[in-house]
Amino acid sequence: MRLSCPGEAGATCKLALKLTVTETFKGKKLISVTARKKKKVTKKVVVVGAATVTLRAGESRTVRISLNSTGKRLLAKRHKLKVRLRITQTLASGRSTTIRSQTLTFKTAKKRVKLHH
Image (cartoon, rainbow, N blue to C red; front, top):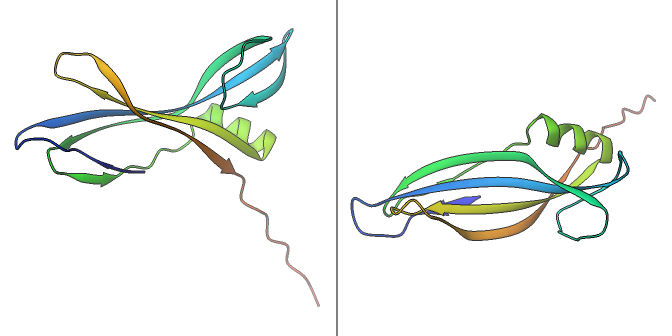
């Protein structure tokens, strides 16, 4: 994800990136994982990856966020994982505001099959 910090010289941008999914339970059994929020059965928002970065004014940087162990386990089990990416900026006053939110999809790498002739 390419991020940049607009602003006057000497200013900094503190950004937090968080990947989340919503797990849906029926009783104690996990029945679905989604990036959307719905209110029907028991739901739990789970963080599957996070990163923080501080940029100086005018600076741009590409930031990589990898899945944590929970995210890797869900991806291995489901082979495709839709996650919600939320980027928040902490302001000088201490308040944080969401500056971007989008859905991303992770897929497991396809296994290559060797053919013997």
